[in-house]
Image (cartoon, rainbow, N blue to C red; front, side, top):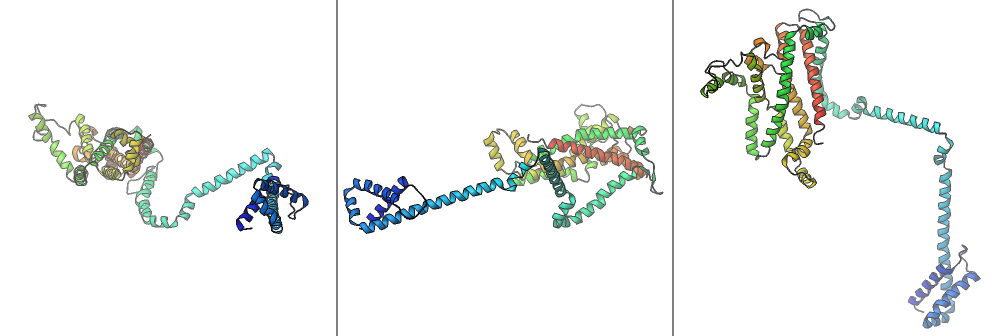
Length: 425
């Protein structure tokens, strides 16, 4: 019998055993198994006379094949049964594992108490990981590299602010040691100093008008200039930024706002027939503050403007393509939903710079309107601070003024930060 027919007989026997054999996990053949396999072989052989004849002619060899096939089949069934028993034992062990049965032995109150204890421990660990000490220990190299700048910043910025707040509760004339006087400086500042109230009002008007307008102008001009080619963009950036660094800016505006008929503004308005005689622009109280606001706006395109230019050039161009797919239809929607959210750090920096400039107006008023100005129409908190600190040397009272100005800046910065978080919503 050739190998092909032996293989066919072996497969036939195996299939018959799968269908009809009753497994008793005994690999030795018995009478019942031989009867079942014999019936299977006879049934299959009756369908093919030629195959039946060949099986009958090779008795000894077929018996060996029959026995081998039966043994292989029973061994396979024993392996499956062994795996099933092991799986059942594993599942039974899991049911009795203390890890799974632990909760069954605890009352609800005990479980709740343990849960609360675990939650508190997790909070303690999270608080420890968020502490400054833990972060410094984890990032020692980074803090070591920051140390030189931090030392300088603390020495020349943080420490003077803290000292100023402390001196605001003292009387200090630069000749004698500071004497503690409690809230006396602040009571005098808000209840008895009429000039401070006028200066505070002028400063708030400056901040409310020049702050938002200059901020929007910086962003708008930066957005427009960013659309030009690099060389044109560089040239336009220089033109807009130059006034903020021009040392003779006040001299130019002094010529423009000169009170005689040869002043540029007076001459132009008289030539056009809009006025009949020259106006005293910086000596009339109703003109002083508006003129100072115009000059401040002209000088406002400074560092914040440059930060906006830099931020616009870092926006990923693929964001605009994705926004177009999502339904953004015009440039204003691109600005609100794509450009501004992508440059939030620059927006925050520009806001801080514009707020600082708006509250710290002093040089413009001093150079154009004088210090003090007519009826204090151009006075600001900083000019009032310079008066007491640099002229009268009442450093305790000047420190109180500086503390109020510092709190105004910090509060305004917090408000602006909250507003900028909503950009793009």
